[in-house]
Every structure is written in structure tokens, then in C-alpha cells.
Image (cartoon, rainbow, N blue to C red; front, side, top):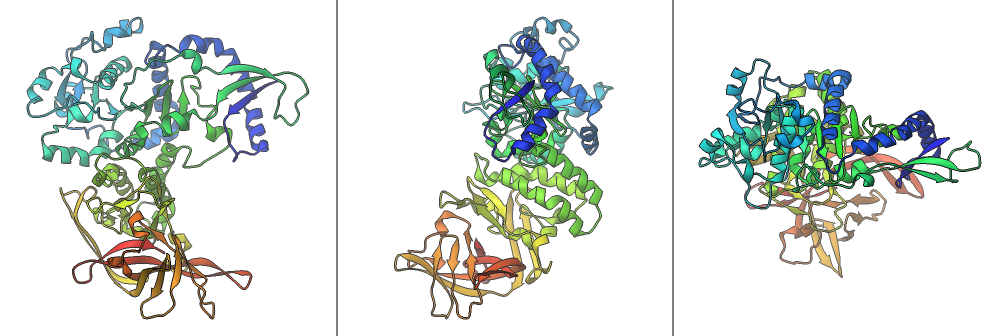
Length: 602
């Protein structure tokens, strides 16, 4: 009997689940053992080899011809006619793509030997290509050194010939791989967008959703800045056969068993937690592209809505989701994104409740993936997710005015009640240039953004405020990116409170009342008599709001604003009672009549 051992810690898997999964795959494991010798020959000394290219072509063919969900997801794209302004032509003279000799010598298509490449306007390429313009995209991290970029000064030169010898290793590898895969065009942001033209940059960034959605494949330099063609030890990535007397089978007999030992968590380790995927801009590139080829340190991984695979697991049988029967956004965010997109098409035109039920939960998960990612410029938080927001808007046929600085009007009031998870008093700050204080995008944190309140939990699906008015003025004419002005105007009950540092602890009381309640970071313990209220849970937005020891601080006078009513639990007299709970915000007054900023959710 042959078994599979997952070399990982997975406390969420029960023994029964794992045994069921392994028994289900027993025939597959036998076949895997037979293919080990073949794998030893196909895994080369780097991540770009003839075998890697051949496997990538097989994945692309499988995705386009056999994956029904991927085909349906692809059909949602706006169409091949919507192209980027420019593309890189990797074979401007028709010298390379028709040459089959690369299979015996891939160096023939490397930038060292095949030096011809230039930028072309997409409309010019479209007019000369009767079969349509198909292109790849590249996700990469900009080099710390001065990169080769398109500017007014380099425009004429790049139109004639890109100086490929000056390109980074990542760009050179991307051009070579494009040729090997049979694609004439690839889009790379720094070479296809004039970095010296602010108007053009703004225009192309606003079209990022379409650029990635209409591509054929995204090449991802997931490892970081070291390129796509990475050296490796083939033996370090191959599964091994281990003989042992240990067994988790419920019906196995005593004696030596053979196990195929594979790493249980390479996807999370090398892809999800890869250096490139820690960058905020890359999340939307990864989700919007129909397919992604991840080039990691020891392996090439494939990702589409239907399949997550690698060179040693080309059919994805060892995927966590399949082994544990999971259907969890955390484990396959691309699959979840595609599913949410198609569900959005189904509920398009229905009432807001249908929209919330199908889209809001996943959109908040996207925010949780997005919020802890890194940005060179923190005020780019909204632009870096604008492509995803525009994709949702298009799928739901919503008006642009529905989008309020990262929050959808249809999800109010609940979406105002976000909170920073795992604040731990460390480093969360607010960037007023990134977004207004009522938006999750205003907080810079290494933690995740949680939705403290969902519409379906409400006792009454109506806000505790009236006359919601918004004023959104974008900086560059695109309300999905950076904003010049973003205000909410509400007619709402305001409860004044005071906060003060007393006897070594932060205390709070209702304005005009004598009783001070001790604040313990996220919690204020209240023991009124009679017991009307058992406790109020506070989550401060930023670290600087946690202390109130400065007597001159304006934080001493704050204002509680109830937003909505939800179902809550209260522990009174040794019993747990379900009771309506008021959820809301605490505001700090700003200079100017009736102007406030958010500091707490409760």
C-alpha cells in the first residue's frame, strides 16, 4: 500500500478527513511513483528550461480548452479590442517566433542573442495583425537601481530599438519567455507608459483593470528582484520515497510501508508569502489576469481559477483545497475572485440585498489581503486596488458614485464599522492623504482590516442616521484613485464623552456624568446599577489614539455616534442574553464648524 505524507502542520485537518483524502488519491500516488524518474529528467537546473516552457504551454492549453469556469470568467472581459496604449514588440522583424530551433537551444531567443525589441502603439499592431493582438503582462518589483524606463527622452529610441542590454534580468527573462511561448507582445508598465507624462500615467493607471483582464497570461516575478530564470538544485524540489513503519491508515497492516513524501505548504510559502505578493499593486494584477505563471526560487507555479499546480504536481492533485475538501477564500483567492465575479453577473440589476449577499463578504476579504501589503507611497492605497473596484462596479452595473473611497454605498451603514485587527499597539498610523478617516484605506497597518459589522447581522437594516450626503472630488478625475476631497455629511445623534488619564489608567465617562470607567485598550468595563449595559468594546484605529496622558490633547473631548443596531450578547446574572447592540463610531472634533474625524469603532 502506498500513502502520502504531508510534511506540514495542519491542525485543522481531522484524521478522518486526511485518511479519506489519501485513500481517494491512492491510485494517483502509485502513478506518481512511476513518474518520479521522469520528473527527475524534466526538472532542470533553472526555472526557465525547455521542459518548463512545454509545461506552461500545456497548462495554457488545458485552461483555454478544458476549464469551463476559466472560459466563463474569460468571457466576462471587455474584449480584445480594448488594448493598452503601447506594447513591447519582442519580434518586430519576424525573426524569432517562427524559428523552432529554440527547443534545442533556448538561448537563441534570449536578449543576449535575439536583441531586436521595440515599443509599438497597440492600434498600429492591431492594424497589421489580422488574428488580433494577444499579449502577456509582467508583475514585478521595480529595481532599487535606476531602471530603464520610457520617458520623453527615450521615446524615439524605444520606438526604434529598446536597449535590451540595459534591461534588468527580470525584463530580459520576460521577453525571452514571451518568445518561447509564442507571443509577440508583452506589456511592462515602466517601458509601455511614459513615466514623464503625468496625464498618460494617470490614464493608463485608470485602465489597469482592463490591461490585465484582457491579457492572455501574467508572468509574475514572485521571488522579487532577482529575475525569472533562477538557478536551483533539481533534487531539492523532487518528491522522495520513504520507507517507514508509521501509518495513519485506519486499516493498515503492520509492516513497512512506502510513502511519497512531498511538502505540504509550498504554495503558501513560495507564492502567497512570496516577496512580490507582499506588494499592494500586485494583488489586483494577480486577481485580474486570467492566468498567472509564478516564478519562485525553486519552482514554477501555475494559477488560474480552476487550477493551482507546479512542475512536480502539474495537475494540482496535491493542492490543500483538494486534499482537505476545502472551499476557503484563504486558500484559493483567485478561484474565489472568479466565482464572485460570475455571481455578480447573476445578481446584476437585483436589489441591494442580493448584491450584499453575493459580493460584500468577498470584497472585505480582498481588503484583508490588500490592507497589510506594502506600498512605496502609502497614499497609493486606493489606486492600488482601483482595478478590482472597477471590475466589481462593471460586473454589478453600478454607477461610479456608488464607490466612496473604498466603501460601497450599497453596503452602508455596516461598511463604516471596519476595524483594525490585531492592532497590538504597534505602528498603526493614519495617512490623511490616502483616504478620509471614515475609510479603511486611511490606516497604514501591518494587520488586517476586519468588518466589525455585517448587514445580515442587523436587527434593523437601516442606519441610525439620516440624510447621508457625500462630496467626492478626485485629484485626477478618477474617483477610484486619489481624492482631493472626500466627506460624509450625516444628520445623527451625537453623545459627548470625555477621556482622561487618571490614576495610571485611561478613563472615559459620558459628558456631565461623574462616573469614570476604566479603559483597557479595546474594552471599557461598565458596571452600572441597574445593569443596563455590561460592556462596550472599543477598537482604536491607530496607535497614537491609545494613550490619553497628555492633558492638553484634543482627544480628551470626543463624540460617540451610533450608526446601526445589531444582535449582541450580554452576560448578566450568570446567564447569556441575546440583546440589541448599538454599533457606532467615536469622533474627534476638527477645526471648522461641524467637522470631525473618526478615531474609534465600538
